[in-house]
Structures are given as C-alpha cells and as structure tokens.
Length: 546
Image (tube, rainbow, N blue to C red; front, side, top):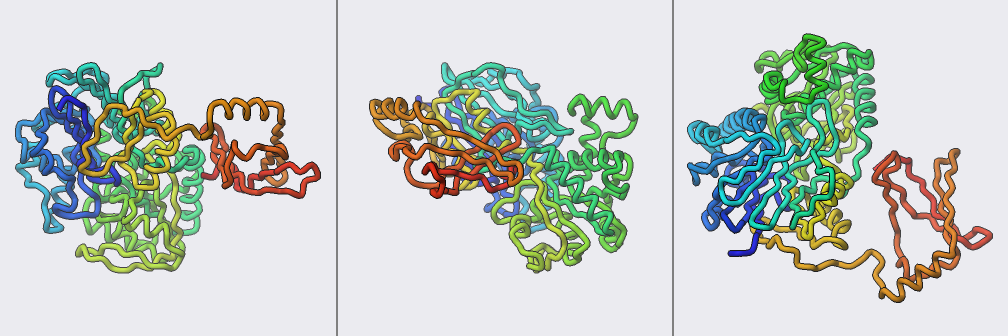
C-alpha cells in the first residue's frame, strides 16, 4: 500500500480507548492504546484485533492517562518485542496508572492483563527527550510538548517526503504544573493534521477567572461549615488544584483547613514530588525558595487507608477532599459523594471533562434534590440524593476550539482528521475547517488516506465570483455602526436598511471573538421600529459567557 493511511482503533468519535495506527511507506506506527473509563473487560478495549492485519513496527505513547495507556499490556501480549517510545515523565507515570488499572480491573472480576504482562510492558518503554528526531525504523518522528499533562507529547511524523502532525491531547494554556503546548515560531506546513476535538464546540472561559470563582466558591462553603469534594483526574489536575489551594490559603482567600488527597492522587502526587526537575521552572524555584515540598506541605495530607477515609467522611469538620476518579466511575470519589451529597451545606465541584455516560455528567444535569447512581463499597450502583451545592469549573487540560484552530493553522495542512471527541464537538469544529481543508471525521476501524483529496465544502458566502465582486462593490459604500451601552451591557449593531439577501441567508448568526474578554455575541434581535428602518441587532448575554 503506497498511500499513507490512518486507522483509528478507538478514540475517534469518543473520548476513551484512544489508539491510532499510521500505515506508512516504511512500516506501521501505532500511537497509544487506551481503555474506556467505566467499561470492563473487552468492552474497555480498542479494536486491537485489527493489528493482526497491520502489525506495528514501533509504538509511541503520547501520555499516561488511562484512556491512552490502559490497554498497553494487551498490545505487548500480541507483539512482545514492540518498542514503545515516550518521554521520561510519561514512562514514570505509566507505571502508576497501569498498576492502578490492574488493581481496579481485577477487583471488578475482569482483569485486562496480568502483573507479569504489565512488567514486560514497562520494560519495552524507551524514554526519549522532546525535540529528538527518531529515525530507527525507516520513518521518522519527533515528540513535541503538548501541554495537557507532565510529559505529554504531540508527534510530528515523517514518511518519505510526506509529514503528518498528530496533536495528541493538547492544551495551549499554561498551569502551575505544566507549560503550554509548544508551537513552531513560523507556519510549518504538513500534509495532514490528526487533531483531538474534545472541546471542538466550545470556547472556554478565561482560566484566571475560573480559578478566581473556584477559590471563592470553596471559601464560601468552608466558611459555612461545609465540606468540599473535588472529583479529580489523578494526573496533573489533582496537583494543579493542590497548588491553587495552597496559594489561596497562604493569601487568606480560603480558611486554612485540611486538604486530603485520596485514591490514585496519592501515589501520583508523590511521584510528582520526585519529578521536580521535570516540572515548570516557576514551581521549581518556589520549592527551592520555600524549602518545602511543592505539593505535600502545609495542610495537605495523603489518605493512607480505608480507616482514615471513613474517619474523614464521618467528621463534620470543614475540609477539602481531592479524590479520583475524576468522572466518578469508580475509586474513592463516589464514596465521599455518597456521604456528602445529601447535605446542603456541602459542595461538589467538577473541574474536568465528563463523558456522556459518566456519573459526573449526570450529576451536573440534575436539579437540586435529584438522584444520581453511584457505586457503593461493593461496586454496585445505588441512587444517592443530591442536595449539596454542585458546580462546574472549567479547569480543563484540553484546548478549546479557538486553541485547536490556532494550532492547526500553524501547520497549514491540506487534510485534517478530527478524533477524540463526541459527535457535536467534531461536527462543530469541522464546520470551521472545511472551507480551507479536506476534513474527515473517521469512524473507528475506518482506513482513511492522508493525502489531500482537494475537496472543500466551499466558502462561507456561497455565490458566483462575478456576483460576489458586485456585492462587495455595492456594500463597500454602506455604513455599519457599533455602539455599546454600559448601562444595559448591550452591544448594538446598526445595519443598512438595504442589505442584499444574497449575501447572508435567513437565520440566526453568532459572532465569536477568539481573543479578549468577549467570547460570544449573539445577533438575535431585529428591531424594525427604528425611524430610519435599519436593523438593530442586540447582545443580551453577559460578556465573557461561552
């Protein structure tokens, strides 16, 4: 097969079980082998049986989240000599995640792999630094910082004269525990980009503002005598929240109360302490100046066993608990939620992505007093009433639509494949791309050529070139005025009374600003009562709301 192809084994139209195979001239490159959170046994795995048709020559692990690493030993069971490339941090964290995956899947009665298979898998990991070009297998690849998580990488793949950029999970916003994704200083054209699209339909609020309101909400709950549960991804998010809380308590924004880390967050935070030289420089410098551990200091402590956890749950003393899992499928977080959700003085704050079937997503959709199904101590699901304060804060480690579009533009690809997103996110993002790129939304198991087909949906304004020039000439002599009313917080746009209907069809339009405080302005109110007959389109949604 001379044409370069992409084969999504999982994680194409979903966030989970990510695994992608590249059919290259020189061999096959497999990227990631994840599991589906909340699923058990074979249902948790990607379509790894397809690898029998296309055996991989080498493999890359972009980062160590469960949905990218959980099925790695299953791949090595089939291909025991497969080299797996990743960064040093990813290699260290992967050992923790695979150990936890083995423990959880065994307790569920459906172990995905054995301890021996996990050990052999970890022996196949080959850490390589960022920006190091690896060409041992005919094709070449380079790992580039992708933000998202300590050690996470995007991949630039080279095969012959062709190149593909695989974003992996990416974030263009720096946090206390990871720098933002690296981008080339100048536009660097590639043949294709395979991009995640987790928030492809969303413009996220400014992170600093989200952190401020998050801290305020925690302070209100603590001062009211309540307890705060933060279900969190153990990798990266838990450590970021710990930093936020330590800073807020030191500044008096939150009363100084115990902060308990439970579940996988315990061992991961200890691992982060040991990887201080790999963390952002400001965090390293702060740890050196204070001569304190960057995470496990002050009121922060680890919940070591069930007895200690039961004591925290039973206590009425205000505190904050950061516990895995982040989507509340399993782990320690459902156990705290079962005890604390029924009480109005407590709070549960969601700080990360929730898939469509997760208890965390259903909890966000509940009205106060509704019930959510959560696991009990024996793994069975039981209804739990939710009277406590439940809110979502966007502290995501994924780039939003604006960030993804900016990254794709920097690589100026002919073809774009959108993966790692639900249907709405992928289709919404495709609408912003398919006038300039050949856009594909691959299905799991679909073999997609990576060559640009030249197909485009067409420009936003669809009309003949000669007619379009005439429209431009006519409308160039018209005037559009914009006025902001500070009393009512309204932006009023006055359009000419004779605006050619061929230019804009009927319907509702949304103007979105990708930079600055205003993130969305909806043109929705047509006022025909104006004396001059002009349309007045008013913004009535608060600025800054997505």
